[in-house]
Image (cartoon, rainbow, N blue to C red; front, side, top):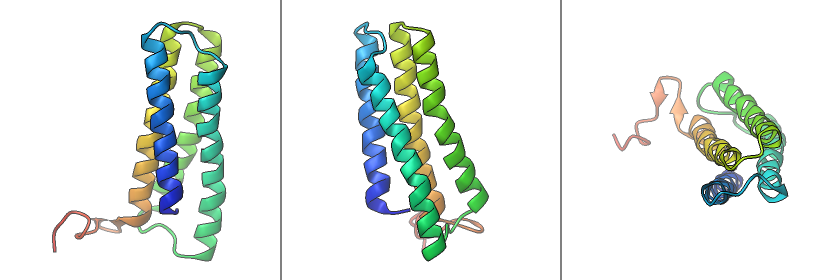
Length: 133
């Protein structure tokens, strides 16, 4: 993983989450804007797969569990299409809230993948990451 791409994904996901939440709370149904924004989050996750494959094969892999990292990545890939599917089926303001929750969940998952990649050692979090030592 690369820091700039990780933070790009987190910022975009949070922005999409806030946009969808605001539009949902003011009573708007899902539109091309909200569904397209979540598609952008999904596109960034697909790009994350490419970045992960390249970085994993050309440099050091995650300091934490590779299986856990891949599990987060695969799960993150499933969430946006499921939320968009929900938004297409149920065209109410609450679908935008579901889209918001999905986008914000992706931001948290990307942050956790970053922790697994850089901070988590075989015995848990590295002492420096916890402020110990």
